[in-house]
Length: 167
Image 1 (cartoon, rainbow, N blue to C red):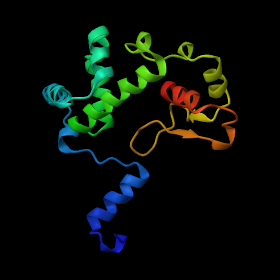
Image 2: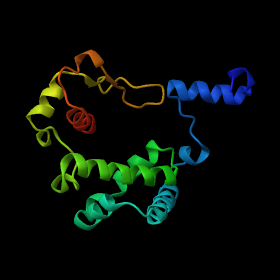
Image 3: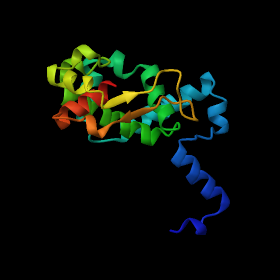
């Protein structure tokens, strides 16, 4: 579809999407306790509807405190604009990838630099995956993450995934 065929509102939304500008909804602006509890309940319901979620179920069994932590879940909900369907799919993918990359022992904790092996740290130290300082944010207040492709060196895809997971 040509952009000239879009309405003014659709063009503005496309521009916001490109530049990372999130227009908060009225519900997001009124992010009170009742709203958050409603979103957490909706997320739990959507998670229950997903059939293939072996890594997520494993994490829930071994690390229920971590997987059920409202702060972790709200982090994912906010990142997905409080869309419980998208959030549930992302959480399932998150735990699947985390299990694949770091194993069962790391499934119930935040990944730290100590969780990276020597090759992963070498990849990390090359500086190809970076974040701007904490006081630099995009227009929506999110941290800015970027990659410098020419610094990849002999990094393996697995090491890159692990360093991006850590970052």
